[in-house]
Amino acid sequence: MTQLSRRQVLLASGAVLIVSAAEAADSQSVRGQPASSARRWGLLIDTAKCAADCTICVDACKAEMGLTGHDRPLTDAQYVRKVNVKDPASGHTHSLPVMCQHCAKPPCVDVCPTGASMKRADGIVLVDRHICIGCRYCMMACPYKARSFAHEAQTGQQPHLPRGKGTVEGCTLCVHRVDEGRPPACVEACAAKAKGAMLFGDLKDSSSDIARRVAREATSRIRADLGLDPAVRYQGI
Amino acid sequence: MLARLLLGLLMMASATAALAAEPLALPKAKGGTTCVEAPAVMRRDHPDMLKHQRDETMRLGIRGAKASLKECVACHSTAAADGAPRRVDDPGQFCQSCHAYVAVKPDCFECHAAVPGQKTAGGAP
Ligand code: SF4
Ligand code: SF4
Image 1 (cartoon, chains in turn green, yellow):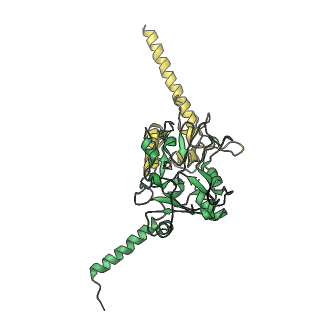
Image 2 (cartoon, rainbow over the protein chains, first blue to last red):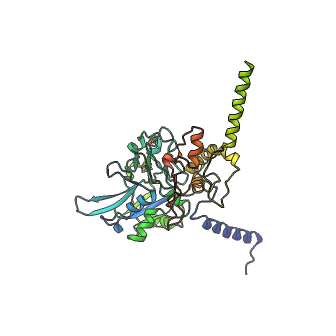
Image 3 (cartoon, each protein chain N blue to C red):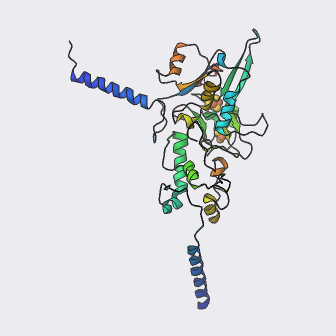
């Protein structure tokens, strides 16, 4: 029988400690600690499970974020929308939810004159409404039409999502939930009330469901040709 | 001349006395709660505390800090007779009373919720 050296035993126990620490910190942000660039939050959306007439994710988003409209679909705030597409050659149709793609190289951040449009260390792209001047350059720059502008004075805000007149807003990937270790509201609602077409997780954690599927299965990104490296991936398109 | 000066001093003194005798009638915070700092510190420093924290939380993602506007609202909003929460920036309410007195308009509640969040089945508000 081989004798384990003292050093090997120490190394092995150290590995166990590291694994358990990583597991504990896996889902939730650590209180008092900043978001970490060791993570990249992302979504994998299976369009085969997404019905054209289903708006459960859109409705869940509006409820979660306290988005109230003025019956003006062109300008009312929307963080996620359903896009129905058809292949003109085959006639094949599919439907996909499109929200901020939380690009790794976000043009909305590049063009912002104030630094309000920003990317957190963990890849979540946000608007710091404290310093947004409402110029809407970012809305012009975003190829995914992901941002909205609050044209009117707002009421009925949720405590976790301040929003007000004259500033730009968009999908936050439910950062308030993510920091508590909970999935985004759209993902939760789709799993509970529809077919569970959306998977949320850490793309940089090779043991997460999303990273494993992205490594194993064919996935695509909308307008991948632009090279913005979005954190939202799709299957079936 | 001297008499006028004395009169002026007397009026100033009585005005100060009147102020001291009539502190602002602020609605009480929720029972059983303790503020994160002593009242004197809060009165002077709460704008700096909140402004410092907003950047740390919003831009760096630091959660669970001592200063939190959400917690201010949670403790300092009161309920109307029908149980509906009142906005902390309504006249006579906690934030507005002081800010009206010193003639400063707080912008916070153009964007931030001025009433506490309702607990949902999903967890924290
Ligand atoms: S999808 Fe648009 S708003 Fe979101 S990060 Fe990319 S460019 Fe910015
Ligand atoms: S609207 Fe706001 S976030 Fe967008 S580019 Fe202008 S200042 Fe930046």
